[in-house]
Length: 116
Image 1 (cartoon, rainbow, N blue to C red):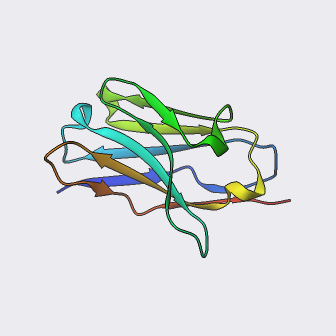
Image 2 (cartoon, helix red, strand yellow):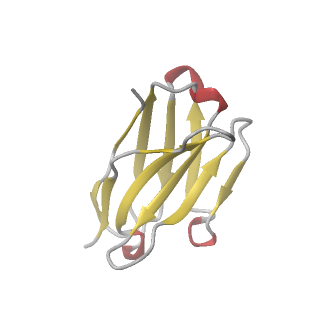
């Protein structure tokens, strides 16, 4: 059974930092592109950052220079380091795993709230 389990969310003040983790099981993790998405209330889910199986990364313009995605294949885990957080980063953050010709998988989400 495939599981993607996010952790690390919480309440942080503007300008603060959080690191999200997503631990995967039941998939050949190293061949999957891993992504972090977020969904704020009343808004569509959007891509925040993605890292390919080869380690190439891309980011939404709104988080470039502030967020960093990384992966640890032996630990089957992808991370999202979030610095200089802003109130507009408040959302539920979801982990996604995708690979060509295979089903895509989602985690259950973790809440990030940026507020003073």
